[in-house]
Length: 443
Image (tube, rainbow, N blue to C red; front, side):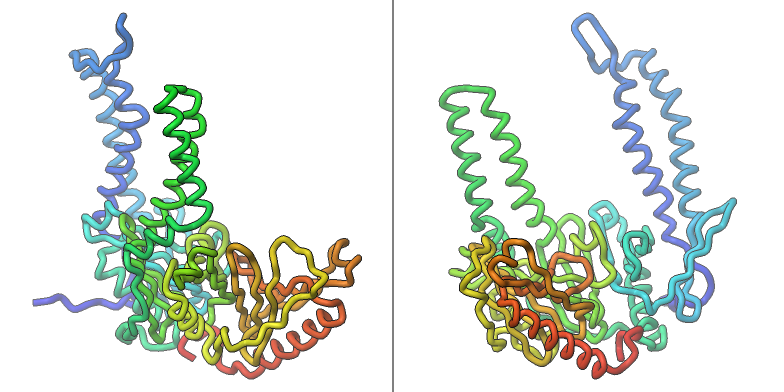
């Protein structure tokens, strides 16, 4: 008979018991790499060798046994030191044994809830719950680790309570939107001008090394190879099996090959969107969708900036219409920039409707930046010295810090002022007409 599931609002809960031996194991691995293995090495006349003599084994045991005890104590201590519970509309996390620290986080401040499963934890059916709160770099709560089923139940209960619903509310159903095929992902990473140029440089340096046996060329070959790994292999591993689904509690993303991640972006937390179309992708009809999400900062913002790594352009546009309901980016008429503009980042134009403000710029990599009027934090006009000589200006529609920054560059000065005034009016009207309680996702 299946045991009844206890809600996380009932009593105080601990992490999974396997967290203690897992942390002890990680501690021992670090010890062995840094200190344990060198203890097995012996200096001889012929150099440093691996020798299992009685003296070496005794020395290794004398150091390893105390370190094993320290590892076990450390694992138990960290497991016992963390407790958590859901109390009313707060997530309460208690840390410490000798000195207790209590952190109370209102669920209304939650920006996103992720389930992360590194490769090692997947073997033991464990998962990490990461709760992103508004407030910058120090606002992440990481519960490492819970059982996979417990982690999913905790995520569902947090989502329900953050939406103002009872904690026992079952997880909202989802509607599948798109799955990125592995071949498309690999092809999109390879057919980019920087990657193709780097690959040609690597092949040329490798041929030169083989033909002339010149070791100095490795100073070029090795860094170029590392660059290719970072540009192709790393994102391939990160975004493999990428799927996007829509649900009432937000946009659900699942991806990862070695470390799997399930990410939920609540409605209204996406502040700005960019549709990225490199020149070769445009001939294939591909696009990438990047976003700025409220509450993310630093490394977390960089990891969460990709809403869709690659997809047919019509799929990308459909996803944008789901993020900003009631808009069709391609239907927004873009007014070209001034003919006097000579900027390197070629500005194609800017336009607006009742829902969004849109700018398009860039060659050979074209970017279409979109921000909803209701998400605009401020509208400002800037003029650099070169623009002042030409009577031009740039209009910035500001979102929170992130990869997407919306700006209409090189506009005639009078036109720029008119854009600022009209955009500010639209933003004010959009915020007034938004209604509902912004602290409750479901409203």
